[in-house]
Amino acid sequence: MTKTVTKIVLASGNPGKLRELKALLDQSLSHISFSLAPEGFDPQETGSTFGENALIKARAAAQLTGCISLADDSGICVSALNGAPGIRSARYAPGTDADRRIKLLEALADVPDDKRQAYFACALAVVDGEGKLLYAGESHWHGKIAKSEAGANGFGYDSIFIPDSLDETSAQIDPETKNRMSHRGMAFAELKKHLLLSL
Image 1 (cartoon, helix red, strand yellow):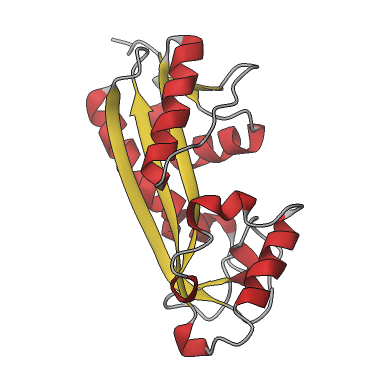
Image 2 (cartoon, rainbow, N blue to C red):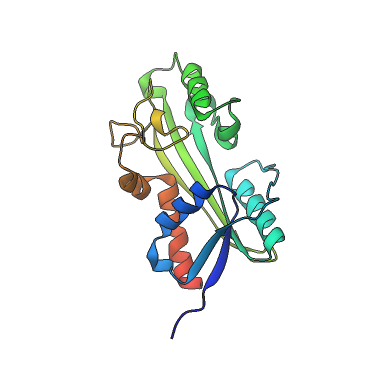
C-alpha cells in the first residue's frame, strides 16, 4: 500500500535552503513533499534564542499556508565574545557574508588560539497547520575561529570555523562530510528519525 504524501512547507523563501533540506533528508522520506513558503513570508525574528526564532518562522509559514511547517534558525556563538554573534549572526554586520567574517576576525584579532572556542547552533521547529508545536530540537557543532579565512566550500562563517578534531575549516571539507558532521546535519538527522516515526 502506497503511503499518502504529506506536504511540509519550509519556512524560507530561499531555494538553496530547500535543496539543502532535500539533500539532508534524502530519499527515505519519499512520502513527504517539501516546498518553500509562499510570497509574503517575512516574519520578524524577535526571539531571544535560536529555538524561539525557529518557532516564530514555522508558525508564520503555517499561518500563510495551513500546512505543516518546518523552520530552522542557526548561527555561530563565540566564547570570547560572550556568545556573539549568536542569533544576530546573519545581521552581525551590514553587507555580505564576507563583511561579517571580517568583523568577527577583527573582533578576535588579539585573542590567542586557546581562547577562540566557538560553536555553530541549529534549532529546528515543526508545527501543524494551526501552529501547534510538533517537534523542536537543537544541535551544536563545536570548534574554534581561525586566524584567517580558508576554503571555498560552504557559506556564512564556514571559511573561518575549524571544527574540533580537524585542522581545516568547514569550508575546506567536502560537502558530504560536512553534512554528516555539522550542526545542521546533526539537527536534521534527529528530525528525520522523528518524521519517519510520526508521518
